[in-house]
Amino acid sequence: MRKAWLLAGALALAGCADKAAEMAAVPSTQVSLKADDTAGLRKVGAEILFWTQAQRDANFPHMERLFPGNVVKRGSRVRALPAGKPLPIDAAAVDAFVAGQNVGGLIVLQDGKVRLERYARGYGPEGRWTSFSVAKSFTSALVGAAIKDGYIKSVDEPVTKYIPELAGSGYDGVTIAQLLTMTSGVKWNEDYTDPNSDVARMFLQPVPAGQDPTVFFMKTLPRESAPGTKWVYKTGETNLIGVLVMRATKVPLATYLSEKVWKPYGMEQDAFWMVDPSGHEVSGCCLSVSLRDYARMGQFALEGGKGILPANWIADSTRAHAEIGVPGYGYGYQWWTYPQGRYGAQGIFGQTIRVDPKTRTVIVVSAAAPKATDQAYGRARTEFLNMLFDAAAK
Image (cartoon, rainbow, N blue to C red; front, top):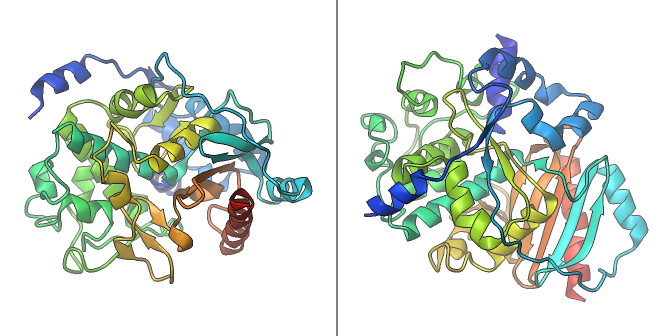
């Protein structure tokens, strides 16, 4: 049983009918061991949080070798990332950060130009690295795209409009915005060390045929506070957002991400998105992307998702809608907000996209940190990122 619940934790960390028909015609390519190989999936997934450093180094760039998933296809045009003036920062400081934080890739863009790029741990520009919860911010963008395309009317609509199975549950009266900001008021336990936590049990229960495993579990949760009044980090709610987008668009998330972001914005490489036992992308986790394409995603946000997302979507997504109990920090629409007007995406084991609109700078870190979460590690990372932002401002 211990191996089974650890899989769930690992995965957690884990009117437009014509348009829908057009999107449905675009295939979502499956790559995997086997989509229905739940025994194999659980066996490997059970070990993720306890992999050795050598296993993290070997597997974080190659999750598609171990897990089933769908491909996010690139297009024929690649958005150039030209070289910029080298960042004025001591090379020894960069070396120390890369070594001390077990970094696989580090890149700094300013005004869309590469001012610093570094690889280590066998990683390189042609590879991909897993995102863990960085994927949540990508899922947020898909909500914006679905609103612009007319599949979703607004974030003020009730979640039950798109997921009617939630009627009569703790999600009655909860809006899409409250799901995005994790302020639904539904009770949730995200303790990865507790086998009885919600994040651990989410994919464990037998699910009746034809029912989505995320919805099946989430509708059993009780409400603990009024919607919009309390922030609690809930990976399960990001997974619900993915279900909502799939229901609205009627296509897999990997297909929609390809058509709305990857191809039009000019991502350089295909991405890989792990799937849950039902074959649906785990929208709160598990998207594998190249370092430069993570940077392009940060640049996409910095530019406001022009032409792809509603005009105000990124501004609304990257401002603090909820306080998280740390002064200067907050949570938006699946984006974290930081002091000095900065925002970003973050995942366990050191995965980071951080954006500074004032200096028009994007920093991405792909890492294989020794621990899933560590306060000292996080503080050291933020200090170094602040140093990079300061250097970019000179």
